[in-house]
Image (cartoon, rainbow, N blue to C red):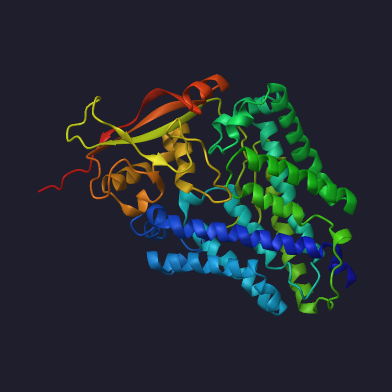
Length: 473
């Protein structure tokens, strides 16, 4: 059937698939390098303990069948290898059904990880990668032109990402309606990037223009995705520009990059590329794609109802396979930045005047003289959760105690998550404490005089001096 495929999107499909493969590589690489301390057998939130109380039907995962650190590492590195193969174009070397199975492998493996990842994997871009990754299974390879139905569903995901984020802002914090949220956001966002300090110091009229442009892009432009080609392509280009602005202003894991990839799939690049001649899509493929599209559209009822609700929630999965989800970001914006600073001392009797030395994290602010780095699309999970801990101790209740225990025990895997430890290996601190500080960006004058990009003031104690209890008996 001629209506089933769209030759004009041949090149945009190829770019989208390669971009998605890169994001899969980053996701699996992060899982392989960070899991032992976070969810491993001796991690802060161990997977075995989780699967013992959560049934398979609620969180489908290979790790319900078996879990060990070695098996998890095998799954993560396998996902990484398959993603690299997809990036190299391995799907184009296979028959259509083989390419679909190859794209299914990283989706199933990453689903298994997310569904046992607990707090460490509770971010909206995890579900977004899974939803988009599932659609990629049915997008086809070089043997067929891209199916119209799958291209439409990719735009439907992009619509929900952008429009959902726009609505949650308008319904949430009043500063979005007053166009003042960016007076604070660049300073208080979870993980600033190397340019965030400069974005924060832009003139306030520019910040107001940024917010206004964001509202247009998220609340108006998404509807243009479903218009004829030239207009839809222009809408996708506007979204790409907006997302690149966000990439420059902070570290938001792969959220911005996967949104850019989705927008690329909506670009008509036929004026710059002629699609090769291919055979018509096989009947079985048309039947499968049509059935999947019908299922996903029917499942979209709950995300649509959420969009229309005054009590809209963001980043919610409505099914255990994460096939159709609700998205959104920064429904409220913090007015001040609070950071938890973890310190240790070798003194056997801790005192206020003891030599307390701070642990430094890779991404989150600590040393006021250390300039933020760019990590996205790589995701530093512990650093992000430390930002949540600064908002409220409730966010850290499940894992902060185990984190401190592992630092006191000189745990190698936990220390690898940090930028540096003030204590040499084999000589951990006797006590650890945590203190809450308010951080703010320095002014231009303060930066010139001190060389510090942050200024901080003590707020309160977050955790009193703590040590590993001696064995009883």
